[in-house]
Image (cartoon, rainbow, N blue to C red; front, side):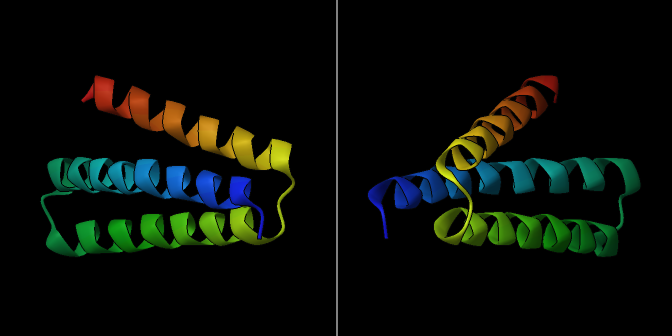
Length: 82
């Protein structure tokens, strides 16, 4: 496995976990329901896990790095907005 794939997946995972936590906090703030927060967290984490596996295995370099940049930018905006 290429080193760039591992680095990209690690960056995606670190930024993605922060994003999952932010999304869960926003769900808690809006609904106040533990069940909604749990489902939101599960969906977000599953999406993140699938993206990491795809980055590690089949996605081309440009798409993988574009995905990392897009997720990092989204999490940055969410962090600044909250």
